[in-house]
Length: 518
Image (cartoon, rainbow, N blue to C red; front, side, top):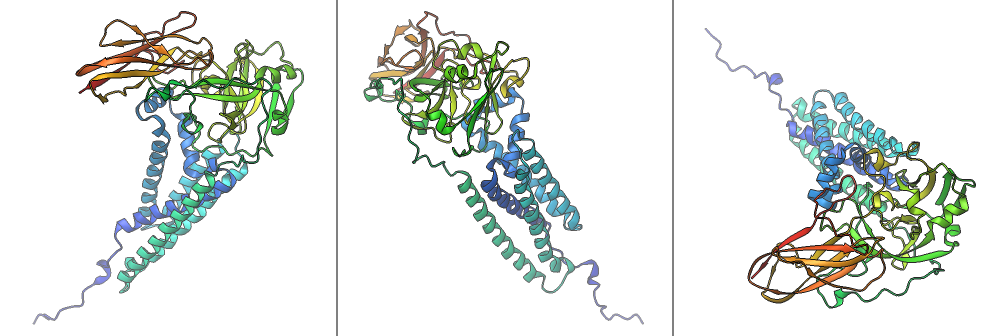
């Protein structure tokens, strides 16, 4: 007879295994913990060497110029957060893959994580001012990341082996995962806070200018609501640069070197720079990435040393045709030598709106060159000036085919009413700002619904290097209306209506806005 007694089930082939998602999660948590600790270490050594930031910086350098300009045009100042988010998500996706690979072969998963860390460390070492110390954040990331991955893997082993304690093991895993998440959050937040510490300038006293500027007149913003302030508050001044983290510079270790094609190279400390005769000027800066009607323009009062005073002290040679300026992070900008020596108030600025420069705007010193877009004349975190030739050395933007000489184009902007806004019928005001640095704004005109151009009333005049506010009273009638504005500089040249993109020497065209009167 056939033995019908039930045989013990062979559980060896049906042993419960930990869900794959837990292994993927272990990879993600390992990456998060490693990145957070690496970020914390970088905040103490060099914030730019943080793993995600260093990779992001390489991505910026490798991105083609048309792509950069397209991104800036679409998302504006959100470009850096979007880049960092993209790098982070890609890293976490690869880390999840590492976690899955560790399910069968822990060493393989750990190897994938190490490859990610090697890429981050290599990226950090490609920066112009990289030091061996900049590998420390990557090393910390590697140690923490691999340790967390293997530790979480061990917590999942009982479940994988089919032991009775598999449910408890998973609970232990989840508790450990929560603890790692909390620890990573604390480490990352502390690292971010340390990295964002503003330089303490409370003990710095700026010298009085030997050549001061009269008080700025009261602007029309006091009577015309919505027009940009005549002087841009420092906190509202635009910031455009390639830095994913703002350099924090100690004045005790900072110096400014002047070398190259000069008879007498020399170096200045911060105190020595402040001891030189100072000038004070009202100057409007504009970024070359500014689209027609855009906000990458700001007006401030700058305090600094005439650039020609420093160059004359060095004794400029006969071969150079460019001034190559270098920032503390190795970033370079080239400025035509003939421009900075043509009599304009180009300066090495140390003050902005009556206070020392902020970290964001180039502390402890920066270039300010009236009439040129910032990418050829406004180096922040300045540390070196080299007299050379365009044939011998190329700056960051020159290598990327941007113009070598880029005078700011005449432009006018409508601030109020805002595009696509709705205003009430009746008496209102159209207003904004116009700029034509180093030529001056002579006239602003407004067009309504394609009609005749009518002159606007100009606000106070603070010189040819400063913008002008303007406004036009308007009896608004119900319906949709198209407003346009243009400016004419003091030479009589009218703002062009030819539409161009920012690359390679600045945008141009006439701004038009549509408003609804209802």
